Image (cartoon, rainbow, N blue to C red; front, side, top):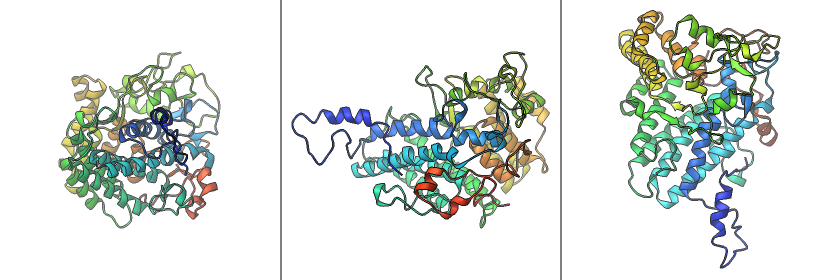
Length: 472
């Protein structure tokens, strides 16, 4: 796992200023061994938002991006290509090289550097952010692959073949990292974080809310995990959210300024050269429910002026102009990338209250979540009221289904939707035509680069094998 620094050019310039008086032959001034926190943080955050969560590192079509693959599994997007393709679950191990490398080489390695540097310098706020982002990246990675290297990895040249930690132990590490991050936020010592923090501009109160909200997210992932109960996990989530997000101002998001050098990741994935379009499953769901978010989430087909998705698994190529694409709220050139919005917290509260107390307790959180998301998207108040009326009041029979269905639309394109589907079975999905495996994939293949460099027994897992917490 070779370390990759995206800021080498900046560091070279800084190091060069000190070379006029002397050069230590044992230290290469163009490759410094230590890096300031303010140089480390910004590129790490960009690569988490743009490269991991949104899948922006693969270019048009999202080639190699796990976040795009999960949206094929969730039947959100569709290729205007003949089968076989990712939409019909045609994968080889090399397809996963990019995201694995992004998670380990670009993000986790540099987060470790940020943690070590900030701890050495006594800059507790940077340490806290590094711990929270490490927890998120580990959670993102283990949810896709299950067992992954961690405790014996990230040691540079000390261990090239680290054994894998179990997913259960990774989840313990995630919660421990979030707890340490919260504790370090309480320390006032050291350098203050500022504009180098793309997410919260150094507002540590917001980072603390995020850490508690992430704790709740990861507690809910284990509602059917072996050795855990839904009731216990839901109560842990509700307890954590007593200190979590409380308003849209708390959203964990990345704001793209737009322009040629800073475009939304889904914009570059979908438009204008991609063969990806919106799937019929997505478009038909929004149209069938008369969902007023439709024009914000999906575009009309250029040739027909109609909302028309392409059926996944279609054996022929159609005219791309006859299909809808993703809309301006999620895939506009400067659309905001939401990694964890407050609306997700509201849906977590709805589901957790449903489990712990019942339907009546879940209803106000569900209504508030839908209302909040629609308002944020740009839907008029009257249309929100009408839509909520057509969806009906939650009942014992439909509550979990409705909560997760609406959460999926509010979180459209988020990798979190794939986690929710695997643990709840909602939204209801059926296997696509021309599928290359017997069931909808429940995990990703291990990447070929990892298999070649660090062979481990877990790497025999197939797309249809379940990760630890995804118990039948």
